[in-house]
Amino acid sequence: MEVIAKGAEANLYLQNGVVVKERIRKEYRIPEIDEVLRSTRTKREARLLSLARRAGVPTPVVLDVDTQRKSITMSYIEGEKLKYLVERLDEDELRELFTHIGSLAARLHRSHIIHGDLTTSNMILSRGRVFFIDFGLGEVNSSLEAKGTDLLVFAKAVRSTHFARESQILEAFFSGYLREYPEGEAVIERMRSIERRGRYVSAR
Image (tube, rainbow, N blue to C red; front, top):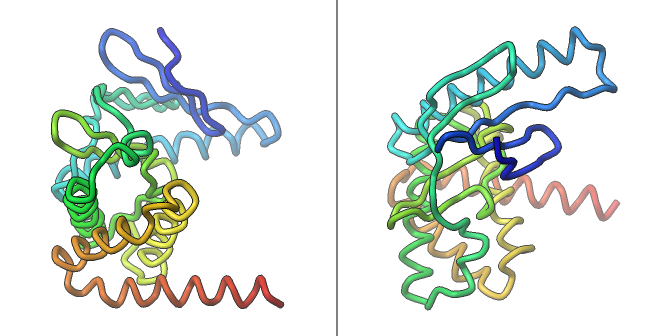
């Protein structure tokens, strides 16, 4: 197996043309609790990947879930992470791409799926399609607070990673989001409210 990524929570391996995501044992946890947490999070992520596909959002296809190994086997998406692609796009390409990404995020939220780490590092452009990956921090949650937090994570990631094009990206993203999810105006307002709360707490 070839290691293709190592993270705080899981490692990714490429094996026979598929990806295996294996959750790492945490030595600081009580072993019984660690077992339950890793097993629960593995099953939850596999479910979210499948739910997202049903909602019309391209994701890797889940091929197997191993609760003993705490791993998910899924299809390999060959392409480039958007994080490394953004700066090479012209204005029209950028607008079209992030309008589409906004509509994909809206499809998740219409189905009450929270990604949990909505950043351009977790989006892959493959043969003209954008795939959302890594739902390890996600959940099913219908609340405005959860959806607003999801959007704020995206906005802050754009601000820190693509600050030179922040306004263009966010304008296109929210345009696509509202086109797909008109009720999402309340989610955007909640996002702004959460951000204001954070600023107030930081200033105290």
